Length: 508
Image 1 (cartoon, helix red, strand yellow):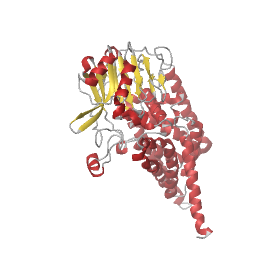
Image 2: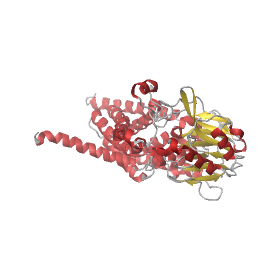
Image 3: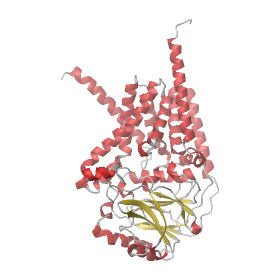
Image 4: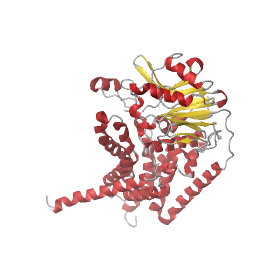
């Protein structure tokens, strides 16, 4: 092959490397790094590069490369579940991260193609990119993880979630960066206006009077059981005893264990159920369990009362594809033996059908959320407003590098969006009591109500008070979707009008 023949390949490789690097820079703003200035620079350069593409095909290619770099880095924790049983699944890990990067990169590629096809500049691209991120959160069961707007979750600007939600934060961030690129100095007014509104709203919300905590005491239990040992039959008794010992003598009104904490199938009033009730003493115990009926099984949050009875329960509604169920699972399980990673019940769990509030007397009514459900803001909307959010999770699946921190940050955002406190019990961390502004509350002893990764212990704390219903909780994301569509339509009209002027002969 001649040097001349190799040259185009080298040019393409160099361009792809540049695109991947921009994606990595944009990803630096996500937890736990939180380098939002680097992320802003990365997004701004990405918008300029895609908008400057000479054709829709080139914009598609650049958008894909930048998106692949972004998602490859932010979702690199996706390899972790494959190493829980490395001899069986470890070989799949590199293919999984490549598939995730390439697949989600297509969303940004489509945004680039659409914006360039419309003849618009960076603003049109920002609108298209905001639109595909909104679509990513809903299509094929949705996956709104690592949204561009999430770069603000470890800053005071997380309070914007109560006004616009995560998708709105994404749109405002991208539009603030795109306006100067499209309009020059005139466009600087847009980021200044957005920054002013964001800072003013955040200051206002942080200055609201502190609502009174609810009466009573809650204990969050974090047993720190490694995922590789969680379902080991030889470790079941020791794991269960750990949970019981962390529960006894709590003096609390409610004790919360993590997702699927109990290593046995439960029969009310017998065996493990009795042990849970006895360890709780005067306290109610809410814990994650697996329950089954015939060939069906559910990932459930159950509330145990005196005598080991289950007084209330909630079945997880939004399951993890391939983690908790396999699409067309019965057929796949029969033909290949492939089963969902997290489920111990054949091909997977059955989704629950409703999200009923759990009643805890003086502690108030709690909105139940199990693990993955916390990344979906629309899933937490209920006809009746709860007093707080109870979240149980097993983040051991996410490893220890980035996944648990990103998941916790999104859970904190849900508290801000709804104006409700959040109590989160995690198997290996992060467990915490979060107030309605997304901040770590104080434990009963005055220390931060937080247990980090890899720690075994408990948190005793009151349930913080709720704030008034937020604007976002009232309106959701439908108005944003309408505004994005209207903005894109206006962009089409302006582009066609501009093209008409360019093709009109002089003096016509």
